[in-house]
Amino acid sequence: MPLPRAAAALVVAAVLAGCGGAEPTASVSGGRVAVELDDFLIQPQDITARHGVVTFSVTNHGRLVHSFHVQAPGCQPVKITRLHPGASATATANLAPGEYRLVCVESNHADLGMTGRLVVR
Image (cartoon, rainbow, N blue to C red; front, side, top):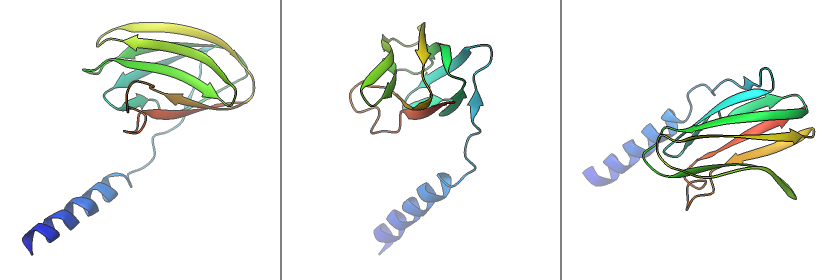
């Protein structure tokens, strides 16, 4: 019986860890937003912006290669691909109002939680 109890304790711990307060939404200031990529995390995960030109300054702080894409149905206005550890890149897009998905498209990184949300008003 110790193994099932240990497994149950791990599940409970994982659920409780995910119940912490949500990260506050970051707002784009001056048409620019800094985004940090880490191993299986995009920070900030929630961003709001006014419609128009937005510049993303993206830095990979992880140990793996990552990418940063901004996606909406039928379009992908930002594509920063293959950022090696320590590398940075910028991309600018003219964004219409709507909801966009932030995602790393490397391997299974999105499945591991490397996603976020951008709301453009």
